[in-house]
Image 1 (cartoon, rainbow, N blue to C red):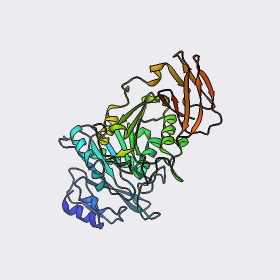
Image 2: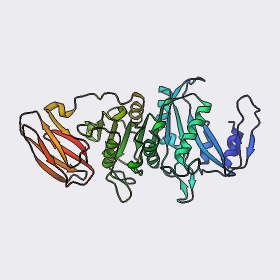
Image 3: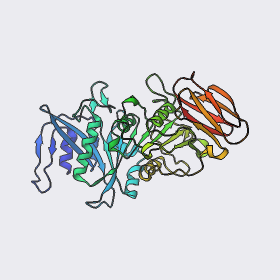
Image 4: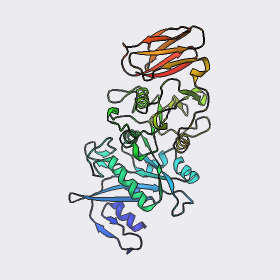
Length: 398
């Protein structure tokens, strides 16, 4: 697309429908109403415009595609789709995604990055994503349908490895990413969320297409609070819901402190369909409480953006280290639990335990005998809990 074409698009005057390769270079011209207020997008050489005629109306949607340096026609490469936050623009999201690190990483590792643009919606007088199914086969009304059509649009131009397509979202884009993982797991090999919130009812999720998930969230997030609020579920509870959905054992994650304890990584393995969940709690970044951002400070020498890509590209695999329950012979099951849990004890010694809710309040405590104990927990409300057994920590879901 040459400069003149992009200029017309920036002004919102015309939509150029490009002819197939080998056809005339003269474009067809259709009058349109732009569905985005981000005119800066079309300054990017990777700017692409999609059109759909539905019920006599021409609808347009936009995205930017970053093609890795060294790409050769016919190269079959992975694709990462990155969704910006509320009021954001695809053009600026390239810089926001790890201070521009994602495009650099794509050049290094060899994968496409697509930055779709949210549509302008009068309800909130801004551009934003709408999670869930919202209008069937309309690329304006339904962002999940738009995503599917955009993938096809990219595939028409480039050779994409459809077994290696990943979704990543920040803030409101994270809401849509959660929704895609929930409802269209068949499209993605894995998904990642930076400072997002889950709005979907997990009971509506597709149980037949489970995807690995990586989550980053700051304890100082003032927009989508870590501990939840009137409209948002606490992040720990969101993790618990995904563990249940993907049938991942919640007991005994491999927990690692990074950056001197300012970041905690909980690594859950062994889910159905070889799924896993990787959860990073950011207490502090650059000397400030973990905020509402796409995190960029290295975590023990590795950037969060690279951590996410390695999670995507390397799959779940087997986590290094020995699960805590194997160290002392203590087991906790079933997970998730209903009215009781069994605390198995092979250490031949009394072990003290204490259980806390996500606010840190003590809800139950006692001792596990040499033969183990059955602990009744029917009085607890459904949710996410932490069980401390001497020096061990288990994360449980009721």
